[in-house]
Length: 130
Image (tube, rainbow, N blue to C red; front, side):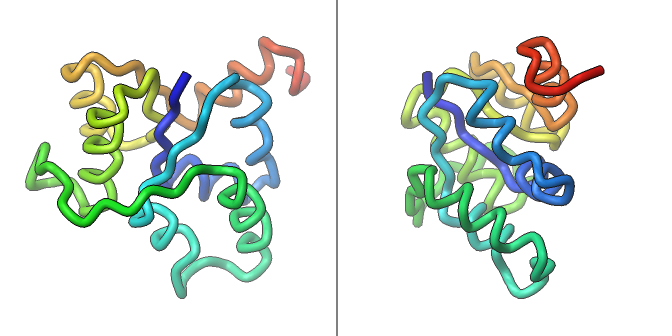
């Protein structure tokens, strides 16, 4: 299984120190566009969350995309990279909280899940209590 990760779920789960729920909930190779890595570890990244993010990202396969396909002009460069990577690698799932990214993922035939979906999945696998 290949999972492509977008920035928002990584940011939100790092805030509660629960990034490990992604790897524990999915038996997947996690791919991350370099644009997403730059987004989450950029100058605005809170210093107390950066170590969690760096540790998680070190276990992901970071992919450089210089020429992403444009799925929607309303999407950021990083979001278009997520969708491009999902398309090129024939991903099983896209991890994103962005409604448009998830809608396009569905149209392209990819399953999608967001932060709340990860938390629910972790609870069903008894990684979190209710």
